Length: 369
Ligand code: SF4
Ligand code: SF4
Image (tube, rainbow, N blue to C red; front, top):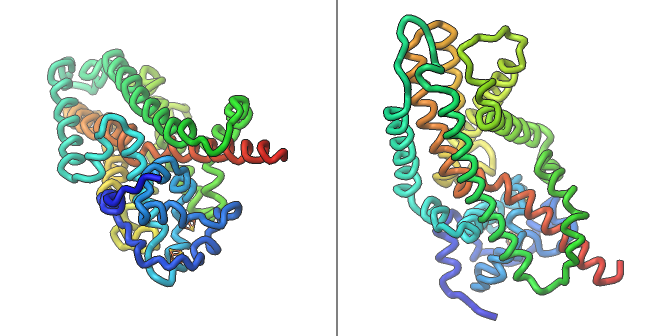
């Protein structure tokens, strides 16, 4: 068994991790609604860090099976913040899955993360200067200024590149947590039969519901639904979504856009406010990445609303300039956050629940169950 004496200091580069005071009383395990099948959750990965067991930590799914309700932290008699420790471990693991090394840089350095956002924003604006069409000023013609075919082509290209990064990182997660784990023999058929678990968790975040209040789960689900709706509208149906016609209010193009922007504005603003006032246990500690993702999402939604409002008021120049700003916020948000930042949790969590369900079934089969 290899021991890495630097593991604790490495993990601490990713956020709060003050579990050396933990005396293993187990109160967090008793309090956690998600620890049903385990007598060590969420303490095992924390022990791995303290003991320097890097391979065991890197192959662990446990940090992803915590949905951060904060109950364990409220209960801990030593104020070791196990909930926040799990959050830090998720950032650490995200950087281990990412083969480019960028996730590690972004999580450890504000200069890297903020610098990357500004560099991508500058690149988007430079592309805009090179490829946008003339500005018609006697009426709003957004599709003359930003031809929808060119924007759609750019969106699709970005989608392919980001998919490549996030899928290859997910493959690394599989390699570390499943392929290299020889403690249980896994029949290939289980990867197929358990696929339903992956679909259900991805669509509903059902496990989150087991550890938190209905209202928090619904808010989280609505944010994800709003984000996914906007993503599909922009990447797949941009020709239908970005038009110079203003459709009647009952048209699906408008209410789908309104649904996505309203839930994104309302709930991301609530998250940011919660972090400012540190109202809940889960908002007591905020890493830079906890701020940037909701702020970029909020700014994307607000500038999208502003484009729509200026177009509606028939103000050509404000529409075009706000559209350019909107793109210069939305694109860096996707490029930095999807494969390397907080967004990637949206994929890693359901994958972890899926992988864990496969392992659980395989163990049952081994026991003849
Ligand atoms: S409740 Fe606190 S002290 Fe007790 S095992 Fe959990 S982290 Fe350690
Ligand atoms: S934060 Fe909630 S889900 Fe996570 S380990 Fe603590 S009690 Fe369990």
